[in-house]
Length: 608
Image: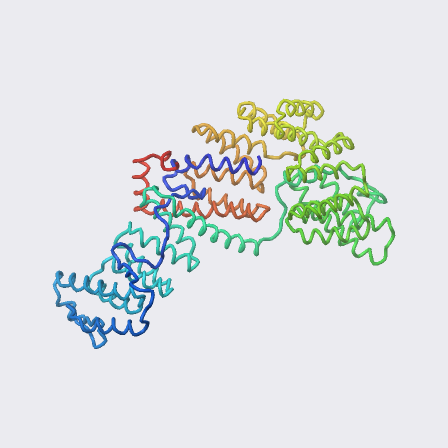
């Protein structure tokens, strides 16, 4: 299934996830928040308001001194020291009645407000602290936390807002302020938690903080992905990905100058490992791909030793081919720089058109289409009738939406190699993309007659049918595709038909369809544990089934397996947001609040 198809699937299921989970739909980055964070240093409605400017000119320090002098000369109902600051001893506090404590604390708060208005945060803190010595009021904590924001002491902000929230859990201003403090401290999980809780207390009626939450989630996910990449060890992708990659190239089993009979070759020679690697590659199983990667590396090591004494053209050709395959596997393992080094050395020893194709693929992967075109041109100069050159060039044009050029290339690929099934499929897809649906159907029918046992054709035809909305026939094509795949000893399309069928069933979210979708995806994961698409799709359905822990694990595994940085970031975002769901669900206050909202409005209304 295409990436756009997956995104659509995710979006269409967020309502169901919200309804079944009993928590917010944050795993899909679909948060509904109470209010925006307009001014982090501004206190709440109960807190001091800033004075209006009477004049553009200020008296500076003198004005401040006059105000401080005024504070000391006005009579206070509470005791003060020589600096005009509150002087409350434990003995005095213990002697006060509850009524007097309330009077003193309110007076202290009002005086603290005056210092806050003039941005004298340090002094304001003293008055709010004195008020707190008398009465543990959430507003006093909130006011003092606003002062700490002004001083950029975010640890203290967290401390005071937390104290306020313990007294008043739905204190939205403190939730917002604490989330900002957590963000400043790079405690992104806690920041997201507060923002999501804020949405609950707001009843999902205002989405204006959604951008704040998205920003924090991206920061958090980015930090995790960067850390994971630094520790990540390169490894091969899913077997179906490898098979699809090499399937677009003509099969190579013989090398000039090498006897293909392994028994006749020296067991530790480069020739032995090269022929063995080609055999493993052509077997097209998960284990054989792993073996091929190792065998090509061993061939290079053996040839490297032999290169000190052998410089014949025949030897250079063999060595260059080993380097070419090694570079291809490094590209698949997402090691483009190491792959380029192998390709460069391969071209120095003995240029082949396929090596230039690989260079073009790396350039296109980096969006450097000028370099890709240059490499394709060099490949054509060496092999002007090579089907695989035109096929991959057509793929590049297809991805850049240059469909006329893509069609020309696929026609040439088909002409020079009528057994290249992918050319048939791509030509049909172009016709569909151009709006020629009947022509696309006709080409798929022709391809099926020419390749009756190939599972790729019904799978991709099924995707076309699904896109047209013909879900019943799409399901049939996916079923045919997987049955054909099961009948083959080699992997071609792999588990993709299972993933596609599961996604179609999930679009019709009955209990029976949901169960079958999960069963299909679990089978896909079991058959190909490195298939990230099956895992991220299964994770969505696990969320719908209220199995959040399993979903989180699958999202994290998907991120690890994903090839591109953006795909890793997306999967990680889902995982981290799902963790917030789980945390909310385990919070008795917030869980109860959500259940009340869902009961009152229903999930459908909340997700609008």
